[in-house]
Length: 362
Image 1 (cartoon, rainbow, N blue to C red):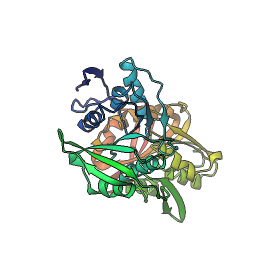
Image 2: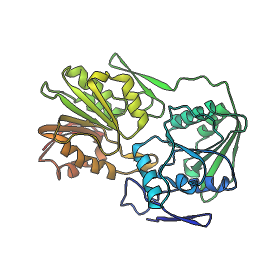
Image 3: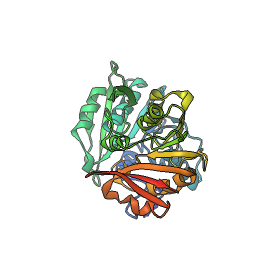
Image 4: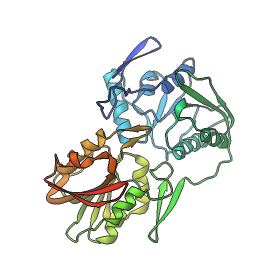
């Protein structure tokens, strides 16, 4: 795995976090390098950085005035770790996609896989824009979608593309529009209940079919009071727990800050605890009667189960001795082999052509 990157005669050592054993994966892309080259002569301008997943932009622009819009707890860790690795200051100004940005001069966006999240970014920028605001959007050409152009044109009068370089390209957006009025929350109906979630949260305006399959097989016992929901998304699983057992208390954990903020729209604060973390930090060990999860294995355009396998180890440490862990997964991932290395008993509670629900005991 390549770790050393040279930018404008400076060398940076960049490591992915979470770490990976896949030697083909780097902590930067050619799309991000192309954006840096485009703005290399910009002087005296403030940069807002969006979707800087591992911190290449924060490192390369460390001597500029920057503000980083973060979406993942693991992203914040990755940025700070790479700044520390290169002996750079870690006093970053962080904001979320729901915060107001005062004045946006130049914004760099690595276009996310989620088109909704891309639109949310652009709306946030436009709300803090002025006539000379410029947005540099980078992407790998194999992921290009005409939807990028359609969304960008809703927010900017001037949308242009650069030539490709090493299979990467830029969209340059200028002349922001000022009459955008839109609510960036999807409303979902589930079994006569209304749930809400912000743009960019997994499954958009519906409950994904994997979670539906888990809910079909979910039975919460009266004794299962302390419940942990890992990769909790909009909180639908915890919502069902509280419907089945009114004595229960739920702790929701998700790496994505917009998922956590969405779950706050759907669950009573008196019965719920919300934690944005990628490693179940701040969660008590040997504390939970029931742990539930529909863990992700898609990370942007990558498929990677390494993070999920590490989560299984932490999940086991959080269970009470007599507790149980119930999860749903795509059947082709064959998690049973990995779960049986950790848990004394692993049962298949439900199965169809695409998904399987596992029930695990310590």
